Length: 323
Ligand SMILES: [Zn+2]
Image 1 (cartoon, rainbow, N blue to C red):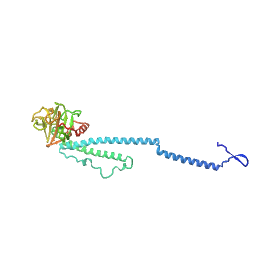
Image 2 (image 1 turned 90 degrees about the vertical axis):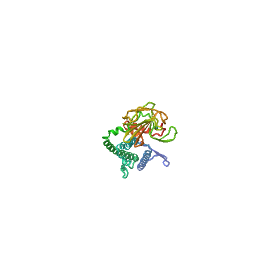
Image 3 (image 1 turned 180 degrees about the vertical axis):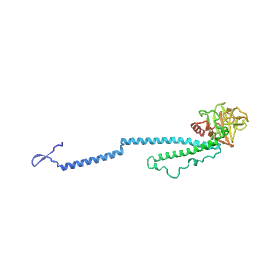
Image 4 (image 1 turned 30 degrees about the horizontal axis):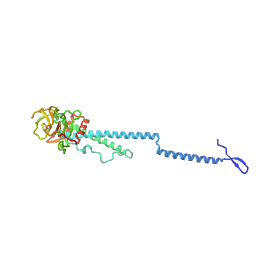
């Protein structure tokens, strides 16, 4: 109930009731309601610009989560790419070379992704770039896998009837190196331990105590076991045929003689520090058609991909060789 209001009438010297007109009441009410509504809308509108609704918060969290998952996926893809690139590299440089097949050119391995925009459907969103890039990467990966798989099929066919060749290739590490801690320096430009000058290091150094057994890395015939080559000290060269020679330097003692036939894994000598060597280690080289090549690509049989990556990483460090 609204209060009854009075006013003082000076003429009649009495209080009189204020009569509110019904029309006015309606008018005031309408103005009040309209005003409140307007104010309410304005408030909600402004608030919504600054304050998130619970639904918005959930959506935002979901979006953030999706983004994170995409990034994780990209990381995994990167790992897959690295593994595949390693396989492709070994495929081109080793497998295909063994069997005299031409290496697959890089363009062919990665071809077919220029020209038309096949990722149009992902455009126009905040995350377009992320999604587009991820899809593109996956497509390239898929294509590379197909090319690689075909190449390996071809290699498998070529490898039939080539058992002798496979046994001859210097395909294992020349010292026992289970946890890969033996490797000191890889193939590439390294600093010389004596002159400290950067120069090409043509093999791989395996740090091992004096007397550590050295094994033939493939079947072959001992071509040399002497210390008549400058710098190498006591060293062994095994001729594997098919243009392959392996070389083992700075030996402490021999376990084979010149012209002796050896099998892969045979004990041929012991680690030492003879010749131009800073500390006991095995300097190991692989030579193909007279050219010294990187031995690391040859350990394919004895290493997992993870181990190979670890070794590759270590071998690429530009450190000091032991010579
Ligand atoms: Zn060396």
